[in-house]
Amino acid sequence: MLEFKKNIYFNPIHLKTPGGLQQLRDVEDPSPIPFNFIHRALSNAQNLFQEIKAMKDRETSDRLGILFPHASRLGDAAILGDLSYRLFTGMTHPQHWFTMNCYHQCFLYDCLLDVVEDYSYNDEAERRELFPEMDGREMDFNRFLLEYFFNTTFLIAPERFNRMTAEEKKQLLRSPDFGDDFPQLKQFSEPEDPTLDKVINSIAPSPEDIKLKPLEHNPYITV
Image (cartoon, rainbow, N blue to C red; front, top):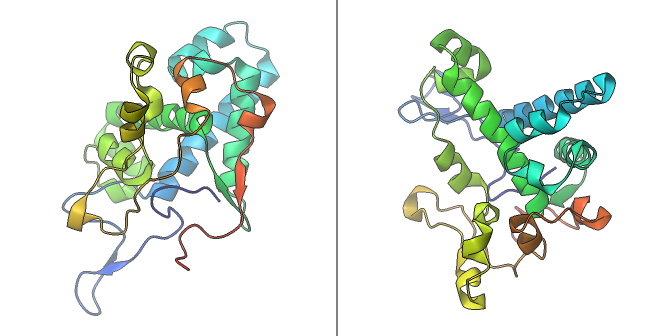
């Protein structure tokens, strides 16, 4: 299972009225059920890389650049396929928790963005089929990122990042504060991920960078 800012494996069910119909999300301001959203994005990526492997597509680099505009700068189909496999298997692992570095987050961001674009261009009926809980409405991807990603610092342009001081870079790692709306969000106070600089500057990951880091405990249980 993958660690996010909020637990994607737990969705509270709210009752509209005692004994009334149950609803999974806020009907006035809907957003996709996080597990379904992320699972669909990673499933799509898995299918894509299986197709590429089977067909030995000569236009692979062009396709990757379109589908993964950020992650494609970090490696070829073999590297991205490895990231895809590790994220998908890590997400669906029932017994262990894993934390992601910036390589994983960058790849996942592109996977999610592809689903958002597909959803946005579809008509209402197709949208309802993709995510029934959205009721065909527009998807607020930025809201989702702020709610579930610790940060998206890996998207900063290298020219800007490389000019920053150490203190300025540290400020980028602060989790957005949602105040009373999302009181369960934890503050992100971990030291800088050593892969951040490499991702921003488009350096290919090492074999160690591609691995998910196992956690020794459930990150959502407060001791």
